[in-house]
Amino acid sequence: MQKISPFLWFDTKAEEAANFYVSVFNGNPRRKIKSKLGKISRYDASGAKASGRPLGSVMIASFSLEGQEFTALNGGMYFKFSGAISFVVDCKTQEEVDYFWEKLGEGGETGQCGWINRDKFGVTWQIVPSALEKYLSDPNPKKSEKVMQAMLKMTKIEIDGLKKAYDGK
Image (tube, rainbow, N blue to C red; front, side):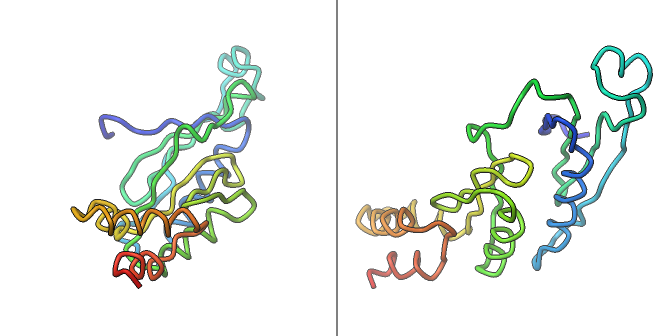
């Protein structure tokens, strides 16, 4: 197990979310590492009594997305996801941006600048092309400002639009 890994609190859909995320990342056209579902733990009598969750229902679903380990818990309605924490998906190509934008945004709410404010499970994602960091960190402040202005007009980030702004076109 890695030293630090995300632990996601769901009401009742931990296993469904884990399966969904694994399928999305395994469908990535530029997949590097196979994503996979890990162990599933179920509420035993003691856990069910303490948590109020049904006996035998899924308690924890572990999974990995391209080598990053996650744990999903069915813990009830006590906590909700917030956009204050998000997962950034680094995309090398527009094909990859388009893929993750479509798959993770389906049934959720998309926002400005590559943000999926909430996927269908309430989790926040940022779908970001690798080129964005290069363009925004350019030592020429006029170039980086033009890229920022272009990005602020986008919902899904378009690499060609960023490049045109960067090149001053």
